[in-house]
Amino acid sequence: MRNIPVQVIIQTVKNLCIEAACNLPEDVEELIKANQAREESRFGKYIFEQMIENIRLAREENQAMCQDTGIAVVYLEVGQDVHITGGSLVDAVNEGVRQGYTQGYLRKSVVIDPVFNRKNTGDNTPAVIHTEIVPGDKLKIMVVPKGAGSENMGALKMLKPSDGLDGVKDFILKTVREAGGNPCPPVIVGVGIGGTMEKATLLAKKALTRKAGTPHPDEKYAALEKELLEKINEMGIGPQGLGGKITALAVHIETYPTHIATLPVTVNLNCHASRHREAIL
Figure 1 (tube, one colour):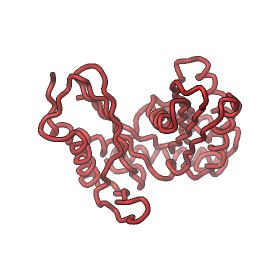
Figure 2: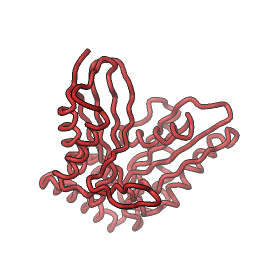
Figure 3: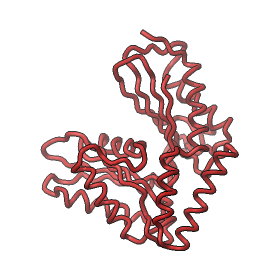
Figure 4: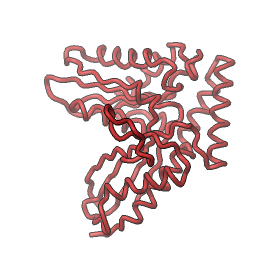
């Protein structure tokens, strides 16, 4: 059994919140630069230039690359041989978010109640926390700030198994087309297929944290990702929705076994600033 004090978790989450908001992962930045070269629209190329400059300034000045620093989605992989000491794991994560958003001067965007009392909590808590128990004595923490512009454009559909592959493709493409410029393209398209209603949604969101542009390990799904990306980039939505060749940087699909009578599909979009940072304790 390995002990991890809550103070270490608080400090780690705080640092990850600030880093995620200010320092875009290199794999995402490299994909943006690669697609700048592929963009054919003159104005689209200019938008890419502004994105790249914004990424540089945010990193050098340690300031948020977007004013919407999101709701904090936190993925925890807790080794079964880990013992959290000195307090609650959930409380520690929320305290880390509280400190990170306050000390990092990140916008607080969480409201107390979704319908009747939309008063700001003032510290961007509570976080949305997903916990998985895994073998070993490590604790992996990933912080993913999720802004509303892209989050609002996501969609879930409970397809019938008879809808098949064509139904899956049609729904994904329809969701991206209807989103248009709202999610600040070029987007990364996260897709979850299978499981149940909530599992498909979790898969779609987790897909956005995969190394940007890496293909699915199953060649059939890798081919589907490539096909969807090509069709999305034929839509002409372009950078920031102002026209051009590059509407999406990547399509990432994740799957899970499902019931014989269901075919759940979720699409979760991420803007070009695909922010996430992780640490292993």
